[in-house]
Amino acid sequence: MGPIGHFAVGLAAKPAAPKVPLGVLFLATVILDVLATAFAFAGIEGAKRGIPWSHGLFMSVIWSLVVALFAARIYREYRAGAVVGLLVFSHWVLDFISHPIPFSSFSWRSWQWSFGHPLPPDLPLLFGGSSKVGLGLYNSISAVEATALELGMFILGAAVYVRYIVKERKSRGPRPA
Ligand SMILES: [Zn+2]
Image (cartoon, rainbow, N blue to C red; front, side, top):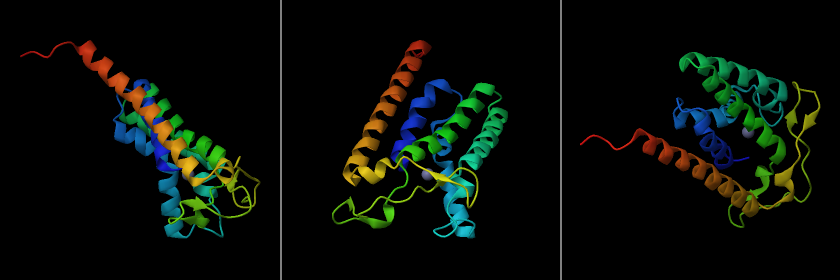
């Protein structure tokens, strides 16, 4: 899934973690992709090696736990840690539904994926050589539909976020003059 869809979950999580800034919630939802980019640079992951260290189910659980512990320490709150950790893991769940994504065949001209045949799953359960999973939603819908889906998710997330912020302002009462 693209960042817009992941960010939607970050927005929706704000009421559950008031102490955590929105930017941190956003970062938590895409940290597995940040890791994937870093690992690709380092040559640990890539087209040949796959993405077990950033997007394997096992390592995604580990990253979620590590980030949860960090966040709980920084914000001195178990709940903040749990929410941020769950956001990290939400990335894997959304990728599990949408992957494999036929990005390699994406055409900016037609705005279509034209791979022609379904791609094999690309999310490993453990490490290299283990079984790979992915429901492949983005293999069966068009790039336009995928974008509409993510924008829709983002609007829903933003609605939850704005509702929370407005309620919060009201409960603080009128500002002193
Ligand atoms: Zn991803």
